[in-house]
Length: 353
Image (cartoon, rainbow, N blue to C red; front, side, top):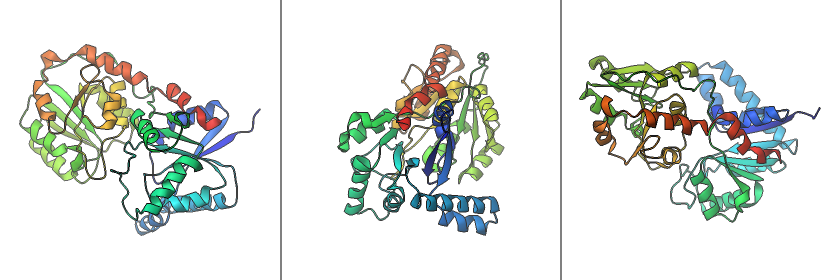
């Protein structure tokens, strides 16, 4: 039997659910994925201050891994780090004797728009250029747009970049037979409760349209606002933060539509998110603003709806129980199947080379 291979996913504080396709590939090849984080010091003191001793212990594990990088070689490491983050310089010194792969969902690589602006200098930009063009074995891009932009802006061959979408767990996010649409269409939002998600606009809309039911799940700075609306309006419900994925899938199945009303900020736009493919897998038709992530997933008018920023309520006004499309629901389900774990696992194969 071949010796088991350990592959390390090394990120700031990423979502492990983004790597279930990679986990599947490693499992199929007698290997495993281990997760480590590089943002240690700040998390150590924050968790110590909050007496979260489990997180304190986790930071010792992360620090031990970073030390092991200096004392070893040829570890396989998938690095997840935001573009132009100044921490790359130190991380490259730790990783110089290892096999490094880069995983990114960022879609703008011409230097005009990026999330990490602290300490960005021409020297740092040049260090990132060397990292992308020379230091890493392969790049795993979460979307086709990410791959396109990397190839357009760096001297790298097309075969150095693989398009790996996030994976959908079909044992959890699957559809039942569609329930008859009642007098009130049901809309669902799951995610961070923050301004850039356009929640205040949605709350104002649904509070004025009692014939439509709106359910929100998540946590964030607008939690109090959401709770106030839910208390005042019978058609608005707050489900809180849903950690259990099976329960979340049940919510998707109970609603005809999932809504993602995102607005771009200086540092952020909606990239390739899990919510849309999870909801589609459960039979909820997606409605989203036309950011690069949703555009990669949704074909407007076929398996969901894409709208410009500020146009969400215009579309919502057109949706009625009478024009609900069971055909569109089925197309959404079909689209979600393209993100099943086994299919995405194949896209990670370059990590085995």
